[in-house]
Length: 302
Image: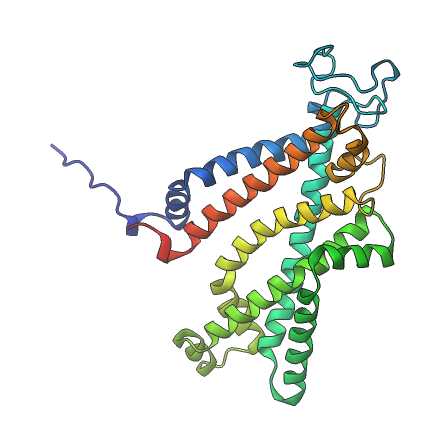
């Protein structure tokens, strides 16, 4: 009779299985991932899921109440805004725009941060030192200005629009990636495997991108996840101030700005976009905490 197979030990797991095992230990992270997956799915399928077009107006149902309030109906589950547009449809389409802003800002900041951070590390000689000094001091200057103030300044110069919002928030987020890549890469350069690669004659570009960079990705991935939520908040703040996406675009910050005058008479008009921002940001942050725990070997349980 064959003996039963021994249970798999942590060392026998594949890297993906070990990562998921560490990630799933954090129940909050799993909950955040689940909620975020639902939001992303709604954003991708917005044209199918949303009951109406986000800009379609119903003149016979201006500021209609949500279904649970007096006068509400199942026709508009979350009511309508001051122009008679369905709130549920605008929230679903707004998820697409807000997530697009967050992912676009994160992607551009990630790529530029890696390039500039590694450029600082690769700097050698007087000219290289000057590159390092210029880049790091520029990042310090950007970080010295409050993020929202800097974003407002950039949008004021470029003009309010969705594209300029992405540019402004990217400038605000960029120093975090540059400094993180530079610090992580400098910490790796003195290790034995990098010294061995140098002795073997590996070229500088291959040394940085193939040998050093993969070992710096763990903190970068966590920062990228949290950076999406920061970008969504910054974009919503700009939209609320009228400097982000312009009407009639269904963006959550713009929806807040359009509804603020009805905060007493029709509070759900302000509550719904605010709750959408809150749920999305909290779910991303919870997932980011789980990524940090799973990618940091010191925080994994044996």
